[in-house]
Length: 554
Image (cartoon, one colour):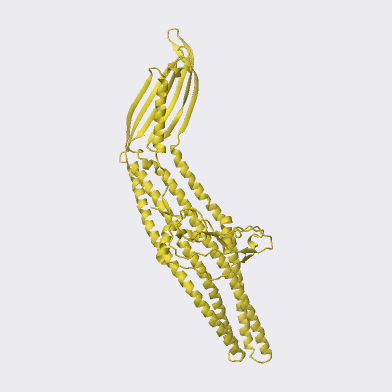
C-alpha cells in the first residue's frame, strides 16, 4: 500500500510538471530574412574581395550581397616604429571591428541581456529543499503536592525534505517527506513520519498561461533588441570608419594641391622678381606676388592641420596594433575614384529600410515588450482565487526511523479548499494596466513616426547621392575651363596685358576648382555610405555578418 501511495504521488507530480512545462512552447519574437530588391549592382569580386558561401535558404536577392574580405586585408600586424600603415578601406573596417574599444564595450550588452532570459526561466525550475533541526530543553514545573520545583528534560528531532515547483499554468506543487520525534523524562518516545503532496492552483489571477510566460517572452524580446542595438552601433561604426577614411584621403589630397599651389606661387614670385630686376614690369607687382605667397602658406598650414586631425580621428576608430600609437603614419592604398553603382528607386530603398533598419526593428521589439506587459497587467486586474489540495500519509513508531514502516497504516490526511483575495478598489492594478496600455499605444505611434522619418531620411540621402554625382561632372568641367583661363591669363601677363593680381585671381579660382573636384568625388562616396546606412544594408553590402539581419514581424 505504501508503494502504491508513493507511486500515485510521484505520477501526479510528474504529470503536472510535464503538462505545465514541457507542453509549453516558449516562442521567441518572430523574425524573417529580408528579401532584398536589387537596388544596386554590388561590387564584383576583385583583388580585395572574394565570394563567401551563401547560407542555405538565402534568397537570390540577398545572396548577391554576400562578399567578404580575403585573408590578406583581414587584419593589421604590429608595425615597427618607422613603418607607415598601409591602409585600404576594407582593412580600416576590419581593424575597427577587431580593435575599436567602443565596440568591445558594446558587445557585452547582448551577453548581459541574454542572462535575463535564463533568470525568467529560472522561476519555473524545480527546487529541492531539506531542513533538519534538533532541539533539547529542560522544563521547570512546581509540584503543589510536594511543594517543590522539579525539572523535565527532553529533546525533539525534525527532518523535512522534498521538491517544489511553480508551473507556467499557475500551479504550485510540492512533494515532501518529514519525520518528527522526541523523548521526555515523563513520556515514552513517539516518532511520526509523513509523506504528502501539496497542490495550489490559481483559478483567476496568476492562472493565465500567457501572462505567466510574458516575463520570459519580454526577456527574449529585450535580448533580441540588444542584438539589433549592437547591429545599429556596428553599422554606424563602419560608416564612421569609411567616412573618416575618405576624410583623410581628401585632406591628404588637399595638402598635395596646396603644396603644388604654394610651389607655383614661389616660382611666380621669383619670376616676377627677375622681371622687375630687368625692368620688364613695375616693382608694385612683387607686392601682389608676396601677398599671394603668404596666402598660400596660410592655406597650406590649415590643410596640414586638417590632415593631422583627420589622421587622429581615423586612428581612434581603427585602433591598429602599433608601437607608435597616436604618431603612427597612415598611407592610403585607395584613391578617390568614382565607384560604379546602380541605384534603385526611392521606393526600393524605403522597403529595405523598413525591413532592415536596426532602430526600427528594435522599436518593434520594444512595442512587443509593451504588448506583453499589457497581458500581465490585465491578469493583475483579476481577483485571486486559488484552489489548494493536500494529500498525506502518516506513520507512527516508538523509535526514530521505524515510523516510515507504518506509512501503509491507517493514518492519513486530506484537505482541500479555496482562498479568495481582492483589494478594495484595486486601484494600483488598474493604474498599472492603464499605464501599460498607454505605453503600448505610444510605442505603436512611435513606430509609425519612425517609419515616416526613415522614409524622409532615405529619400533625402538618395537626393544627395544624385546631387553629388552630378557635381562630379560639373566640378571636372569647371576645373578644365579654369585651367584654360589660367593658361590664357599667364600668357597675357607675360606679354604685359595683364597684372600679377589678375593671374593670382585666376589661380585662386583654379585652386578652388581642383579642391571642389576632389571634394565632389569624396562627397559622392560618403553620400553612398550614408544611403546604405539609412536603408540598413551597409553591413550586407560590406559582407559583414552579424545578428539582427532579419526583419522583426510585429
